[in-house]
Amino acid sequence: MRELLERKFPDVAWPIEYRTVAPDDVWLSPARKRPTVTVSIHEDVVRDETAYYQSAEKIFRSYGGRPHWGKVHYLTSDDFAASYDHWDQWWGVREGVDPTGVLLNDQLRQLRPS
Image (cartoon, rainbow, N blue to C red; front, side):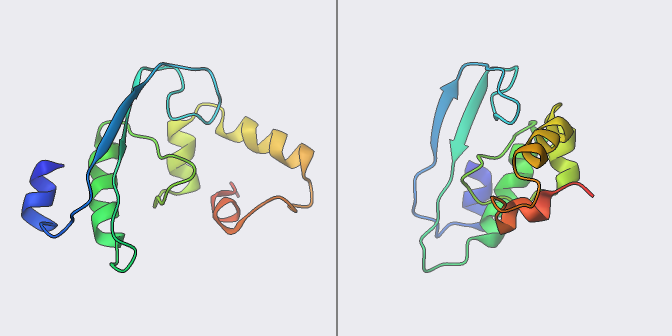
């Protein structure tokens, strides 16, 4: 990340935050079945963060990173299926609870397996 910031995004002024998380057994948790380090990056609301976030996501994914569900990401349903062993089962449960999709938002609609 330091190299990325120095080389491509020297104007990013926000800190990078990290914390450690113990493994858990939650189906769609970034810490599922493994000790995890979370890395949070930020950008000013008046600047376009897309290139920075996509570049950082590429680094995170190269280490098996999984996104925080409340943060911006650029992954597809196939990416999630490769990262979460219960991805399809989770969708089955979700469909059973909400068969008409009332509780889906735009992000989840895009991630819905075909």
